[in-house]
Length: 221
Image (cartoon, rainbow, N blue to C red):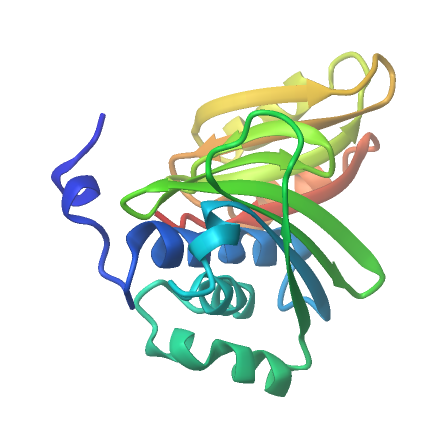
């Protein structure tokens, strides 16, 4: 359902809800996936982002999101300088992504503390976003919920163990999706939650033998 706020747009530093507010939210999600401010980030801009994004401040918006700035944070205007001061080396390239992508799409490759993540996401209008891929796994993350992103070995019972850990710590799951490249390999679990998980729930999930990585993506929309 599209709300009135979706129509009039978010509170933000302009000029464009799609090219600026949505772009900053994509940066925020990439930041959450890498676990903080990246040390390096390669930002590839596709479609309209590539053609007009720089003029609309898309580069500064994504950099600001990577630094943890919200769409209404006035520091977005100076985020490229802020990135340098924060030790973030960020590069921008125009590209044409393979497949069917929304015109306002970016692929962000971020690295921090020896780990990297590759995220593809789109700004779909009025500041709304959707993340469609993480490290090659297809996903569907809107940022409207606190979201758990879990990569785990694909083995019998792992979905039930994860869901039980959340339920027994009183965390209600709004939606859940699992995607895998092959049977018996790694699978990515996406849990959109009605409330942020507490430390006990996260500790229980991390303790599961099959779990390899766990990231909490705070609500951004």
